[in-house]
Amino acid sequence: MFRIKKIMPLVILMFIFLTGCSTKTALASDEEITNLVNNYLEALESRDISSMVKYADDIRFPDKDEQKEQYSSIDGDITDTKLIELQKVNETEFEVTVELVDNGELVNLKFPVKKQKKGWKVIVGQDT
Image 1: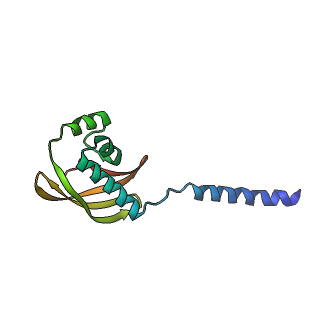
Image 2: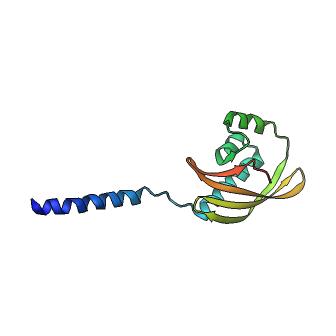
Image 3: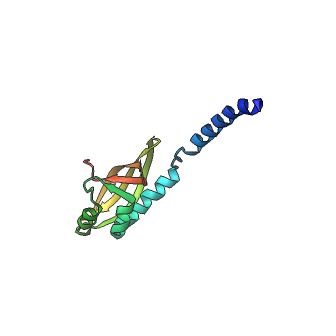
């Protein structure tokens, strides 16, 4: 009985340590972020509004219904989208450079990609 009383605190500490280790957030890989950005760019080209909202957080529109409404009225013709560069800023943020053709004009844009409660999102709508 005496031995169990000595070992029990050690067992409890080990349990707490192991439980704490298992709750750490998994880190994103470059491949995961690349796939996210490419999915967003594909949605942008095809004007798939639901997917654009799914992959991005447009800070101009906190209300997703308003975001969808505004996106449906976009007249621009976006083609030839391409991910040019991916840089890790820290464990919860990347920065991507994309190239696209907007109404016939070649444009390079930078977007942050941030870890949010519901996963990674391309952040759009910020001032450039």
